[in-house]
Image (cartoon, rainbow, N blue to C red; front, side, top):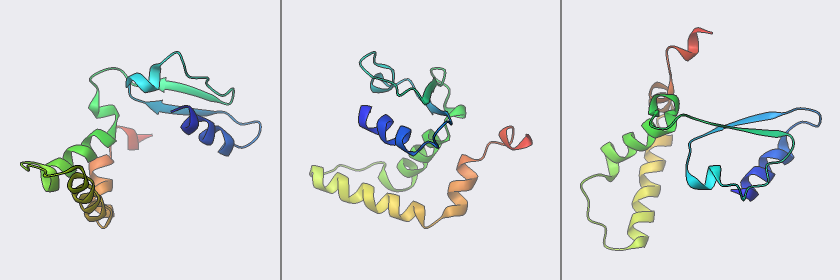
Length: 107
């Protein structure tokens, strides 16, 4: 996570400031992180998937390609997950419909 934050910070226009919205996973909220001065972390409230559209994307992947399976190996998990992801990215309108929040588009 530290490397990720440093990479994001390196891409922020000099003199600008970025806000990173994230869930409250332990690696997002650990006191061990050294938050770059040009970033602010804004954690979402717990148990609020309606504010985090990627949660709905994960659910769509599970519902359509990854559920009700017994995986034989780690490699099979990786391969089938990659297939599911590739299937999804071929459907940009599906991604947009899953991630769109009517209330957010009113502004």
